[in-house]
Length: 134
Image (cartoon, rainbow, N blue to C red):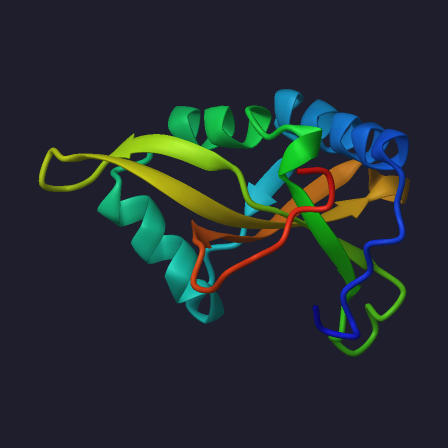
C-alpha cells in the first residue's frame, strides 16, 4: 500500500459517501472524464461498447465492499479534494463478442458543495489492488 493511500475508514463512512455518489449518478449530476489525458477511459468504453446506460449501470452497481482506498488530489488548486477508489468485478462483452469478467478501476471525485461527481478513472484494473472490506 502506498503511503498516499488512506484506508482509515469505517464501513459506514464509505457506505455514506457511496450513497452520496450514487445519488449524483441517479440524478445525472456526474461525468466520466474523457479528455485526452484519460485515454484508458476512452479505450475501455470503446472496447466494451459501453453506452451511457451501461456506464451508469456499472457505476450504480458498485458496492461498499468494492472500496479500496482514498487519496488526495495532487492537481494544483485541488489538493483539498479526496478521491475515492473502488474496483468492482463486472461481467461484460468485449468487441469480439466474448463474455469477460473485468475488474474495473473507478476513481471518484465527489464534490459535496456542488452535489456533483466526477469519475476520473473508469477502466480495467492495471495492477493488483487490495480491498478494505473484503
